[in-house]
Image 1 (cartoon, rainbow, N blue to C red):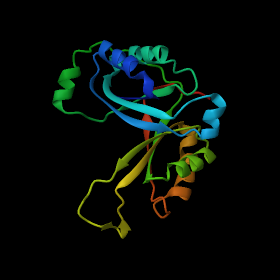
Image 2: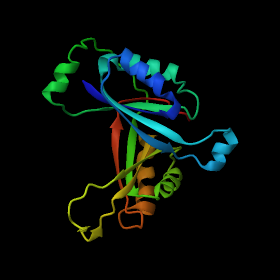
Image 3: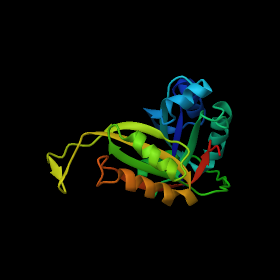
Length: 214
């Protein structure tokens, strides 16, 4: 079984993350920049400077996942609030090259999952991520991460009578399953496709997760 590993942590952890990925021979690894969603007043209260985050993505097999999670949790101190979160998402399929490359990992280890979590992904126009988080917190969300992105040009100025704007904010929220529908409801009402935010919201089930606080 092949999963997609997602690690969101502070921007000064690059060297530690690189060592972990190299130690476990993780392949097809990518990194991009993001930012946390904590308010400036909250950052000042805890004495935290800046909100820069790194989002690391890699392919991983279930046979090594538990060991990678243990190293990430220990070396990055994910039990400490604000240090990050790591989760895996099951892939439905992959091409033959990927399967062959990862086939050397034969040992299968079952990771016990006590709670069911989901990744809620919301795409809105640039500048509306704070509105998304405000709505999500009314639904029970504790925090999230924002990635800046853009729409792919299709050559059409309008699609379904909606003007396509290139710059986007992508908001990632990991939440227990029982909060998911409530969070998505509040986001859709406040930031849905018919609002000025022009938001689209989906959710994906998560296989395993570490770094959830509260």
